[in-house]
Image 1 (cartoon, one colour):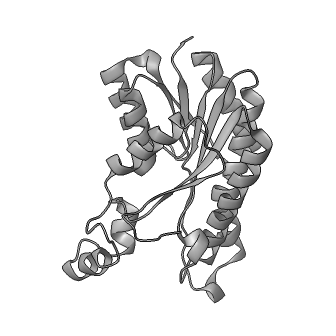
Image 2: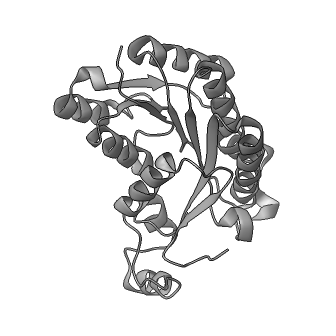
Length: 248
């Protein structure tokens, strides 16, 4: 059992979630890696073990929309660390297609991974953290406010996450603070592929939409997340990290 603060990051085997695990571990937190596919989290887990020790990290495979699996995950986190203080909901998937070509299955799977996953993991966080202050950070997207072509399922899910954040914040205050992180064009694999940023034309087109004149880096996101964790008088808010690409 550890007296250090404990953070669970869902969907944290790769990408932004993995960077958050690294960042929190570097600041002395105990970290719980959640992943969905076999083998996804092995390399990250070993990296944290080698750097900070086995007592500072665990990994657990769970579908974030599966109530029983999420409940069991929280049980294992508390069994190892004795507590859970922070939940960061990063898990989600994209299954883009034109509106008239989105299948029921792709609609349901995207809504489930994002919106239901945030709901289930958030609710179970409350159930497993009944006696101390807590922090929940949901992952939104500007597309949840603006919409975009070929992503009605994703945009609808993220719109739901933004409103869900407000509802959670209203009901869980003052003990648990709930806020929404809304990243923009950060240099992730998904963003690079979606906007063809490995090509000169694709990169130039994207940079033209960014008043800051550059893509976001993982550090831009992790710095904001740590500020959100420490913001004691803030709940129900959206935090945009997008270089001015979308102002609201």
